[in-house]
Amino acid sequence: MNEKQGWKVAVDIASGISADDGRIMGIAFRADFTATFGFAKIGQLLYPGASMTGKLAVEDIGIDGKSLLGEEPAVRRPEESDLALLPKRSDDSNKGSYGKVLIFAGSRNMAGAAVFSARAACRTGAGLVKVATDEANREIIQTLVPEAVLTTYDTGTDMCAFVKEQIGWADAVVLGPGIGRTAGAEQMVQSVLMEARVPCLLDADALNILAEHPEWFRQARADLVLTPHLGEMSRLCRKPVAEIKGSLLETAGTYAARYGGTVVLKDVRTVTACQNGRFYINTTGNHGMATAGSGDVLTGIIGALLGQAVSSDKAAFLGVMIHGMAGDAAARKVGRTSLTASDLIEGICEVLPQKL
Image (tube, rainbow, N blue to C red):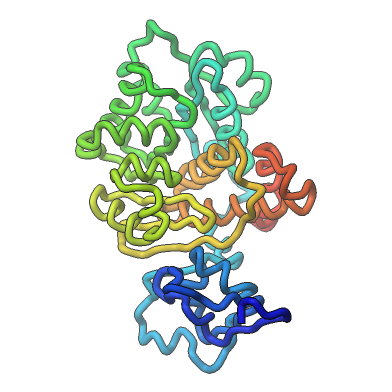
């Protein structure tokens, strides 16, 4: 069948795909279109099963939420209607009403990570954004993100005291993009975990440092969101990337349960594993988002939502969905090949509901 010409349709699920995880069980039928019933299957959303499914249509045959007998599915696919979960904004408000987001990001020659995270947080509605970065980045941040408050450190800074002072200002913390893996960066990560009592998102270099010091998790008192890509997840859980890619739900869920945080495992279909055992599989976005700075934009989006008092699980899966929707909006303007992180930030404006 796969060798034949013509438009090919699968009913319920393409033969040979595992409905549980998208594995190809020996060989599978490659459909151009699949009509499934009641609910999408996990294996139709995760790769490689998604590539064999083609365009997916979920058809109604009388199986709806009532059929679940009050039991919510453990795995969900976020949809645009979920944007209604975002906090409403009031005319009678001020910048303090929408959260103070502190972003530890950037190092010498790595200012871009701080720029993208901060700009994305601003675009996602954060009332105040403060960037804590290396003194070498002062001019760059003040030029490219004039909306942000700036605080800097250098080689002579007492990092523990610096972190403690800055943490007291924040409603949410983003830690890691471009901070490097120096001794000072290690002190920063450990100090944030010890001092923070507000939600914290850990990304990039913070995750690489944490992989070398997993015992630091025990020092954390904050609600944590981790946003590893496959390579970072490999270092965190000491499993090969290929093994992780074939078990996204299991890997993210096990790590979230072990360390008590929310895990956003980034891949073509990003999986969010929550502390309550629920999962979200994101299907927005496109391959144009495989570009430098894209992950930094995501950290800024989720950080802004955390700062607006959105719970960590909702901030994570909504942030991932908004990030992908912004990528789709940007691709419609500039194409997928030409898409950059700056385009993603502009795309945020097009997908956030105007009624908020």
